Image (cartoon, rainbow, N blue to C red; front, side, top):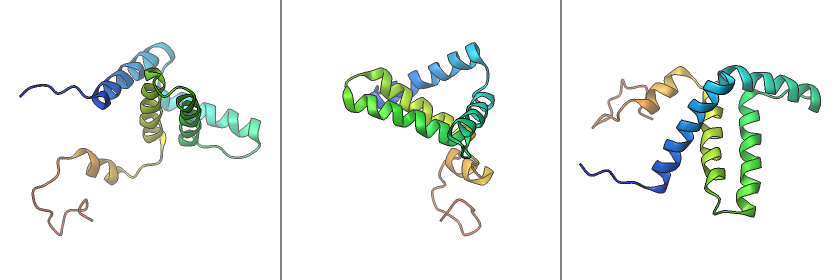
Length: 115
């Protein structure tokens, strides 16, 4: 099967590479984003969650994209912040399994992922 290279696939691949590099350089994002949330909570004098840190950083990238939509690095970073947000968010274990498992040809009534 020929490999189709789309911009989306390239962005996702680069975002994954950046996340691995950052993890290697700075340590686990599952530690840093909660720490950042605690610091932001003190600075802002309100409770901030780790997934909200990811959303805010994504929003910063959005403002940069509005200024220069052709800058690929900002799009890569947005992919990364979305992935980090999903990693640190309180996502139900069953939801993750539903997303990651291959879709069955026909949904059965006892399948918790068929809605």
